[in-house]
Amino acid sequence: MRPEDCAAGDAALARGAWEEARDAFQRTLGARESPEAHEGLALAGWWLDEADIVFDARERAYRLYRDRDDRTGAARIAVWLAWDTWAFRGEHAVASGWLQRARRLLDGLGDTPELAWLELREGALALLDEGDPDRAHRHAAEGIRIGRALRIIDLEMLGRAVQGLALVASGAVAEGMRNLDEVNAAVVAGELSDLIAIGLSCCYLIAACDRVRDYDRAVQWCRRLKAFCAKWGLRPLFAVCRTQYASICMWRGTWIEAEQELTAATEELAASRPAMTADGLVRLAELRRRQGRLVEAASLFEKSEPHGLALLGKAELAFDRGDLRAAADQAERYLRRVLPHNRTDRAAGLDLLVRALVGAGDRDAAKTALAELEAIAALVATAPLRAAASLAAGYVAGGNGDADTARRHLEDAVDLFRQSGAPYELARARLELARALASLQRVEAAIEEAGRAVDLLTELNAELELSRARTLLASLTAKAPAAARPDGRAAGLTTREIEVLRLVAEGLNNQAIGERLFVSEHTVHRHVANIFSKLSVSSRAAAVAQAARRGILAEN
Image 1 (tube, helix red, strand yellow):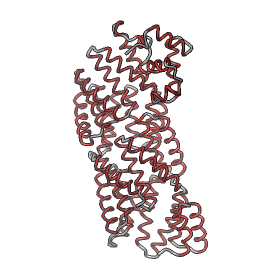
Image 2 (image 1 turned 60 degrees about the vertical axis):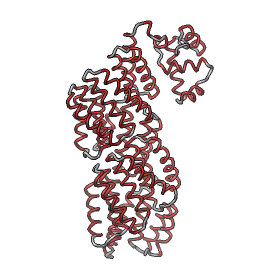
Image 3 (image 1 turned 180 degrees about the vertical axis):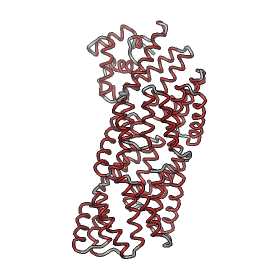
């Protein structure tokens, strides 16, 4: 039973009034010291990102509980200290020591909430720190069992959330997502009361969506999470979740939103939990790489080490710079760190490894890597992963000189990336398809695919890939018979620019064109400027007149 003089602090915690709770517990401790008051002060400090208060109060609470011979109280604090040591300081060995201490204290006490929390924290760290979904699943199952035995729904649901994320990581996506949807439905229904269990459950769902690029599900739940965190002032939880949400924004091509989310989250974490900033930095580095800002990307990847994705990012940078052997070596190094049953993490490394090995001429090794990637894609069965496998198969077939087989695989990749709403990946697949079509002497079709890739990359401002796409398009256009060249292409206009020009001819302004094409007004302005430059005109009327004379507006 908690002391009566903690009542004011406890009431403030229950309302989410973190500063009021901190002040109340500090007044209590000024009058009389107790482990319960230190524990309450630590929790208030945790929500306020005040690390010094958190560690001082929890370490004092631990000693006082031990002095009282309260093993469950001491174990509860030890579990918290493990999590805080990992999150605030990145001291994994110390965190492991606190978890082991908690387990020793709880030995022989039977099922307790503290034991359930220990199992759930160990499960989360097994996955997030060690990348071991099987061990995470086992710990989560034990946490669920204890939660049900004690009839504490918060613990049972948090266990199902950890278990769901572990299932997704291992490739059992449908089952894992069902678990996570159920948990978050319970959150929305008001069945859970523990704010930490609620916040973590939501974050694990966003993390699962990030792994399998499930944009629609992530958006639906992230909106609810934003509202929940804003209501209660849960900055620490949302700062972590938004880095994962930013990856999904990146995938969908909303790069401005991704940058905003990553910048804000990284600043928040740097101020409060510096050990966790690498997750935001490595994702910002990947955004910079896609934008073609390779020097910035390289610097950010260096800063985010030893995060696993930093190594993969460096491999992608080597590929971008044409050092294919280094890219393959780095991808293999990344894969050696990822357990075989952590399938969603392995897929990203295998995708790059296939591309690098094909480019380096190591066809047998590329086929071996492709076989594993295709097996994972068949098991996970999500459209983004099947798209990646099809693209990789297209690379391998093209490397073996089988252009027609490559074409079929690449067409599948284009269809699946388009279905997944992934413009950057779609553009890359279109470029590879254009190369395969050109090898089959289908130059007009190749020009069309390359042109569409240029359009996508222009809207994204992906400068490096855009430069390569324009070079390929110019090469293909030069090879095409003059009679076969569309007048718009002969003028240097892309498919999207022609589309914009037709809407200009209808009398639409930039805002209306953006709404019609589902792009920003800024993007339309850039297209119009490009049209003026390519047609050597200075007004919308002159552009329409020029296009009409050259037959551009009459194209099918």
